[in-house]
Length: 153
Image (cartoon, rainbow, N blue to C red; front, side):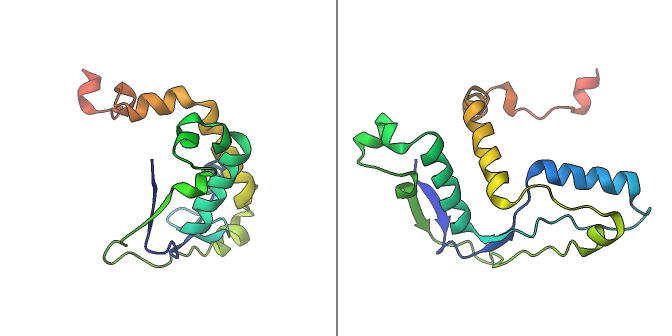
């Protein structure tokens, strides 16, 4: 399927690997001052286009497009060829920035992963868990919200 990229892909976000985020939340729960707010950030600001290209490169390295019969039939040599630039959303924020100085200084928390190692691990997880991904995309029970009040009956 095409990979839609808003505008020129220039919107910037601060990216954080999920395990680092969980560790940050745990650190706040364990050591944070009650009532305080702590921003958890990765110091990994990248444009959306940089993220898409990095994911495509990871996929090309781990599950090459050149070995995907559907892509070969369509003349696609790299996952990057699937990028499709679409109109940007009205009011779309150009940049989200996180100042994580407080959690670093007060609680000593730092991310363990940089953008490259975090994305590489994420891509590998999705490749290793294709069955789960397929079930979610097919609308199986895995898409259902868990823990609803009706479940307690």
